[in-house]
Structures are given as C-alpha cells and as structure tokens.
Image (cartoon, rainbow, N blue to C red; front, side):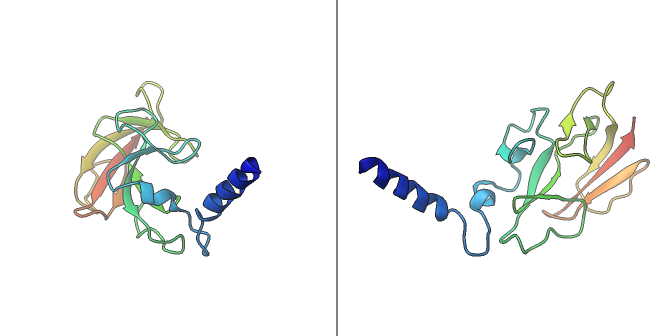
Length: 143
C-alpha cells in the first residue's frame, strides 16, 4: 500500500509540472545570462565549457510567446544567444549540438562582438540580438 501511495504522489507531482497550456516550468529555473548546454536537454553549465554555446537572453512567459526578432535560438521557452567572445571558434551552429572548439577544426570564427544591437560587421555574417538591452551583435567569419 505504501508503494502505491508513493507512486500516486509521484504521478500527481509530475502531472503538476505541466499547466493546461502544455507549458513546462523548465525555463523558470534559468536566469538571463545563464549559459546552457542544449545537447541532450537544456542544462545550466559554466560559460567557459566548450558545450556552453548559448547564453539565456530572454525567458518567455509562455510557449505561445515568440522570441523577439533577431537571431535567437528558441528552446524550452528560452531565447538563446551565442555565448561568444572575439576569437572564439564554433562548429555546428546550424545543428542540434553546437560546440566551441579549436579554430583549426571549427567552421566559423567570431571576428567581433559588439554590445549593441544592429552594429555593422566589418566582415562576415552578423548575428543580432536586440535584447537584453543594449543588445549584442556577433560577427562570424567562415573558416
């Protein structure tokens, strides 16, 4: 009987983890500026780790709310921006598991990071993140 009651309690807790709209509280455990690993599930991680390719820019209130215009990657009600410094190199930005790695084997290099939205990139492709203010522009060049 005790096992049955424990299973019922666990089922009630799990059922309470999703509201009627299907939104999950995953995003509630993250703050703006947290770095995340999205390779298996969204996990907070030290920003210096190679798999910490993204940083939380915005926590959405619902799954119906979209990320603002920009180059955000939306995962689990989080709007993510590239966690990058000038000189960092990445592979897999278009795939499910991007990673920071040695420039000798990477696909792109961060040529410039500017803490303002819509800044001009002297060369390469800009990734623009208008929020949080003052925004961020990350300039990427192919390797």
